Image (cartoon, rainbow, N blue to C red; front, side, top):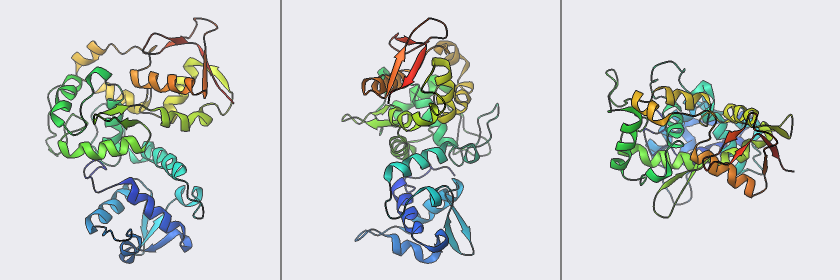
Length: 305
């Protein structure tokens, strides 16, 4: 089962679990007692919500079980401060964990079973490529159907597990958790018209220090490759390439994936970061230049102090 399988696995519950375990010796506590202790005041936490959240936290390697106790794993136990819990730091750690290869099925030439974070990373990588003219209402699966069919062909359930198919989002029930996780991880936001806008600006902003760790001014192609390493659901990233390799042949030909262009969502995010003076783009020459969706091109990019 993947984290999109149920709306009961929520980032907020995971945050509460982490906060609680951070205050305990050895970052662990009796599993049988912990649910009643972390319930918000006046709000009953369903056993199913707690149990499914714990199970997916184990799958994502956030928690482990030892002798009847739940234990908070590194880096959550070492990088979060219990006396000054940072929601931003928690989101950044969660994003890194969800994108980690250890919790995503091994990438092969076939569509992998959607356990762990694989279903989510496939869905994010696909959605970030959608043309803004075709964005669906998040609560209407019938609007997702033609988009997925255009990308992947007719939905074909797996013979050994009909819950999954060659589509990343297989039914209505997955849309709500998909929206929740995509927004939480910094890859989109909700419009007033109930449209999930694909926008990786927050995720890119959180990755800039790693991207520019060695030099504050790099080539456009070097930027793209470092960005893909930090956020593999973006251009040239291993999860984006995996999704593209599973597109229907007709869609691959129609899309004509151009390695010199950024998608509409990534282009919008980069332009926002330039406008907010986090980044500065330059074009001292045409050599190695990459293009944004609106035709703007750059061959070098720098992190502004």
